[in-house]
Length: 200
Image (tube, rainbow, N blue to C red; front, side):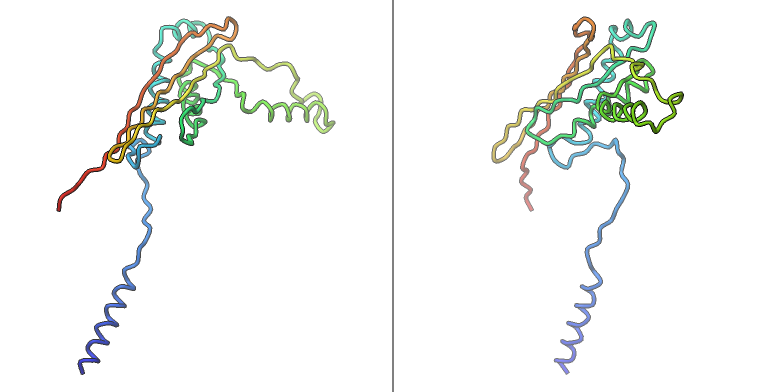
C-alpha cells in the first residue's frame, strides 16, 4: 500500500513539474525609457547624445544666421566610433539627420547613396532602356554647402568591484566653401556598475 502511495505521489509531482515550464513572454516597452541592462553604450545613450547635440545646433545663433534666408544643404559624415565597443554609429547619424530635417531649417544630400544614384543615372542615360525625354539629366544635382561630422570616444576603467565608462560625443559643422568650422559642441555620459553585497 505504501509503495502505491509513493508511486502516486511521484506521478503527481512529475505531472505538476511538467506543467511548469519556462515560457518566453514578449511585451512592448517604452522606446524612450531609460535602459540599464549594462554599462555599454545603449539606446538611452544614443537618444541622449543625438537629442542634446541636435538641440544645441538648432539653438545656436550661428544656425539662425545660416538659415535666415534659405535652408542650407548639409551632408552628414558617418560618426566615427573611437570607443572599444561595437557601436552602430549610423543610428546616431540617422537620428541627428532626421531631427534636423524635421526642424525645417536644413536640407540634406545623402552621400551614402551616391553609388546607387550613379548606377541609376548611368542606367537612364546609357542603357537605351529609358525614354530620353523622361531620363534625368546628369549634372543637375545640388551639392552640399556644409558638412556635419563628429566622433564618439570613451574611457573605461574597472577593478574587481567597480566598472566606470565615460563617453564623449563631439559634433562639428563645417562650411565647405571656406573650410571654417561654424559650430561645435560636445556632450558627455558617465556610467558606473558596482557589485553590491546583499545580506540575507
